[in-house]
Image 1 (cartoon, rainbow, N blue to C red):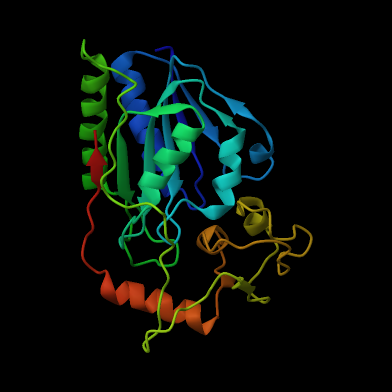
Image 2: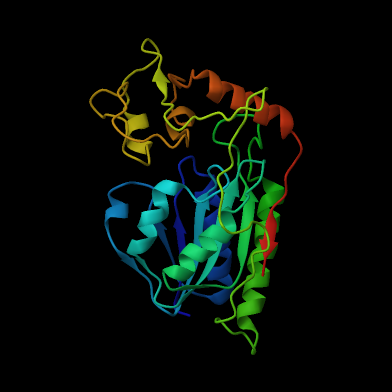
Length: 272
């Protein structure tokens, strides 16, 4: 191998921290240079990205509704793996990662990558400040380090075969979206819900428009949403005046329901 890549889509930063931590450990163990490729923002996703067969790619995305974010599915057609070894990584907010890791592995195979390990890690939920608060934390990073070491040992074995892909046993095909329900068991549809702005708190710093991974917040009028909102909550969590918020009843019920049902500490799940 010639290089280790940290590749990620990360609205609030948990996926970025996880992928970089694993990539840094592997670059150090293999004594290789490491490079970041952040495809969080729209202009980057307009370009074709190629890797080489001698690359080791740590590739991470957040889990949305139990799957790879659907706004990214077409982007995989612009990725050229060229036989590079890859480790798919997903970040979930303490509930479940459902089909996401299996789906990510499949997408990477279709882009001519070779997945030889995979991991689902926990990050603070995008909707909440209490659900998996502060994660990934010290314990998570310790698990990531062990995960990196096992990947290093696997690749270093004399009998290592990159054509033997890792088996992801969590999730199933065909992939399905997780659908939240209200108290009566009816599905809650939050796909068209958009963030609002408390005008007297907004100081027009433009951070929300800059960090939106869909480029959907108008830079000249940050109260205006011009495109898709994926509910990553980057605009809310990175607003220093707390001016951004959601007020949709279905969204708020779902948020409260998640916080009440999933207080337990979910742990990472790893595959080699």
